[in-house]
Length: 483
Ligand SMILES: Cc1cc2nc3c(=O)[nH]c(=O)nc-3n(C[C@H](O)[C@H](O)[C@H](O)COP(=O)(O)OP(=O)(O)OC[C@H]3O[C@@H](n4cnc5c(N)ncnc54)[C@H](O)[C@@H]3O)c2cc1C
Ligand SMILES: NC(=O)C1=CN([C@@H]2O[C@H](COP(=O)(O)OP(=O)(O)OC[C@H]3O[C@@H](n4cnc5c(N)ncnc54)[C@H](OP(=O)(O)O)[C@@H]3O)[C@@H](O)[C@H]2O)C=CC1
Image (cartoon, rainbow, N blue to C red; front, side, top):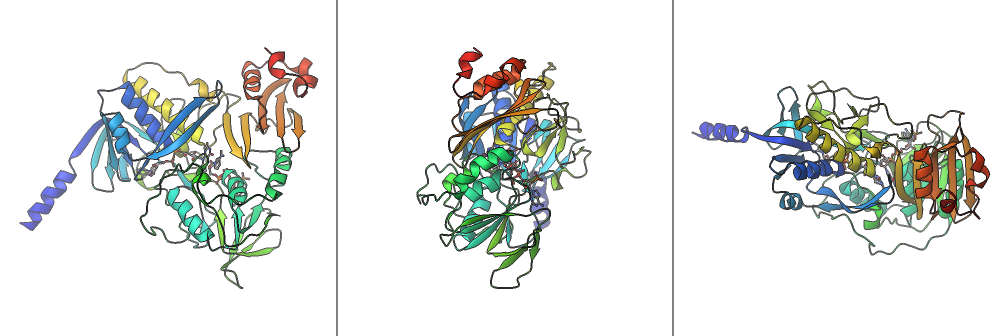
């Protein structure tokens, strides 16, 4: 009898639920894709399967210029999505396995789901310096920031490894704790800046800043009081969605003492030594120094979440481990699309665009993947969207507005370029990248008000050779000049 009941239950749980569209991942890419599909096809059933308890949604979207966009990100309960789009069903469970040839997938909580078209938006997880080291933390989602915050509250010294977005934000935001920043490059912020911009920003880092208010300015991320769900050092499992703009605003990043920051130029691999003294962990830097600290933050990039549930299929992966997608966001498996941090753009890109795993690109890719899936169902042609024409990112570092456009670091240009720079200490840093007299990239730090004009100059590829001397002349209103 008992055996019969459990097999009946098993059958019920294995009954297939079918959807025209299924999206995996409730981060910004997945949610944008679902919204696009649900509004394009109000009569189609759209399923969203996500491991996290909350979804991420775009709020206060503002198109700043043709390609620059700004928005807030809000963490919301999945019911909000279902209330707005009655044709959307959200399952809160991780996907365990996928059979792309049969158009089916299984969730950890025992469901079987069938799809006509699938979009994988499972994001990425921190690429930690070492795995399973209790003193090495990564920062990705709300849970991992809470773990970081908890450890920081009793820390006297931490070592931050990495020179990208997270490291830049952390070394600036952390208060009350000595921060040793292990940087293997000659300048700070290598993923966003060159040495000139870094030089401009360094004084902000060294300046004595007032302590941060204990009260959050904008607490964008809700926090679940679920007790200690992670063991120390686990960082993020990848189950939660990535944080985004101003993530630190909602968290008080304060250590146990009021002390200093120091950058340690250190080339190559960093080694975590076993305990040999008073500190819980020691880090041997390649410049020969050994630094003791309470814990290490590995801000060393991300790895796309392509493992586990995708095994057994024929997905082509890019060198960085992402799912290869073509200019229709289609993977190598039939009817399977991918968007956001999990994918690697493998189409022939515009000369002025490159992929960076950013909030903005997650939104754009999710939206475009939704449009491509719709076009496929309707057998309509679709062109690669204009947003992939020019790389454009707007953010904030060290309290400065930062706009980066095109080949902002002369990526891939070799020696075939010229740089124009204007810098006013404490106010602005402007860098323009020219190739053959045409503008191909720019970095704008501070309130320069140049983004729209420079974006136009990059997009229209005007020959600027005759104007080169005036281009960055602060006494010339460049907007009027090119009107
Ligand atoms: C600390 C931090 C600060 C950042 N700051 C900025 C910034 O200022 N500006 C900016 O542009 N970008 C920023 N980024 C990058 C940005 O957050 C990411 O590029 C973006 O969130 C990626 O979105 P996504 O939807 O692709 O992935 P994610 O947000 O990671 O979402 C992935 C989703 O997939 C789900 N998932 C994973 N595996 C499974 C599975 N097996 N089954 C079901 N669901 C699954 C997860 O639960 C999650 O909901 C920051 C990132 C971090 C970590
Ligand atoms: N404001 C914004 O726009 C922000 C964006 N983000 C995004 O979030 C994601 C995660 O951020 P983050 O982790 O900072 O990743 P990033 O890719 O931005 O930076 C990783 C950094 O770690 C360095 N690195 C990699 N491996 C090692 C190693 N073994 N030893 C020492 N250094 C190493 C990289 O150097 P190298 O390049 O030489 O390999 C690079 O400087 C990124 O996609 C980032 O763009 C994050 C925060 C803010």
